[in-house]
Image 1: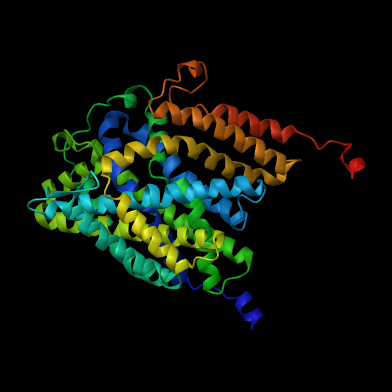
Image 2: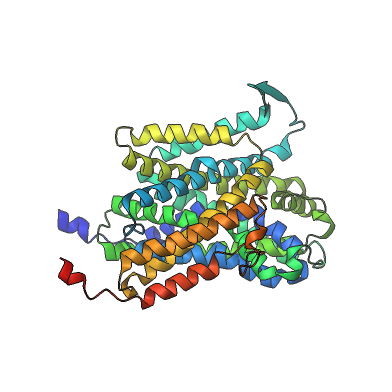
Length: 447
C-alpha cells in the first residue's frame, strides 16, 4: 500500500487544477486594487513601473515557490529554532488575520457589494468605535463562508481549483479584452515618484500585494495538499509545485498588465480616486453599466474569497502545529472571527498601517529566498543564513521606520535609502561575503 501511495501520479486535469488553485490563492485584494492606481500615476512611464511591479509581484513569488519546493517546505531550517518560529509567526500574522485576509474582505465589500447599496452610511457605536452596519453584516457573511470552506482543506483543490477559479478566469479574460479594445483615454502624464524613479516605485508598489510572503505560506500549503492527494515523493512534489507556480505566475502577469493598462488609460474616469478599486469600479461602470458592475462584483468576490480560504487554511494549519492542544478547526473559527473584526477598520487605514510592516519584513523574506537557492554554495550555510537575514532585518527596520513617517535623516547617506530600499546593497554584499567565507581549518581539531 505504501508503495502505491509513493508513486501516485497527478493527471493533467489535477495539475491544471493545482495551478488554477495556486493562482486563485494569490489573486486577492492587493492584486486588483494596486495595479490600476499604479498605472494611472505612472502614465507615460507605465512600462518601467510595470516591469518593477512584475519583479516583486510575479517573479519573486514564482522564485519563492520554487525555493519552498527546493527546500521541501523547510526554508527556515538553518535558522535558530526561536528565530525561525518568530519570523514564521510574524509572516502568518501579517498575511493572515492582521492585514492580508481582512483587506481581501474589505475589498470584496467595497467593490463587490457597496456599489449596489442605495445607502451604505448607517453606523453605530461599540466601545467608542464607530462601525458601519452594512460592512459589519457583509464581513460576518463573507468570513463565515470562507470559514466553512476552510474547515475541509482536503476538498480545496476540487472546490477552488476546479470550480471557482475557472469561472473567475473567464470573467477576467473578458475584462482584460475590454481594457485593450476600449481604452478610456490616452495614456496620461506620470506623477510623483513615477516621474523620477518609475522602476523603483513599481518594485516597492509590488510589495503591497504581499505575494512573496504569501508564497512562503502557499508553497507549504500546496505541498500539504499534494500529500493529501497521495503524492508523497519529494521530487514529485517539487515537480508539481513548480508547474503550479508557472501557471499561477502566467495568470498573475496577465491580470497585472491588463490592470496597469486600464489605469494608465483611465483618464478623467480615475480623477480623485484614492485606490485602484475605485478606478476599476468606475471604468467598468463607464464601459458596461450595471451588467459590468455585476460581473466585476463576481470577479472581485471570488478572487477575495479564494484568497481568504487559502490564508485561513494555511494560518490554521501553522498555528495548529505550533499549539497542538488547540485543534485545526478551532483555529479556523478563531482566525475567521479575528479577520471579520479587523476588516471593520476601513480599507485606507488598513493599507496605511500595513506599509511600514511590509517594508520591514519583505527584505527578510527576499533574503531568505536568495540564501535558500545558495545554501549548497556556502561553506558555512548555517552561519551564512543567520548573518544575511540579520542584516536584511536591520536595514528593513530602517526602511520600515522611514515608511512610518519617523525622521531617519541620519541614514540619508545610504544608497537607495530615499527609495525605501536601503536593505538591498548591504544584504547583497553580505551574501557575496558569505560565498567567500571558508570553513575554519581548526574546526575538526576542536571536536
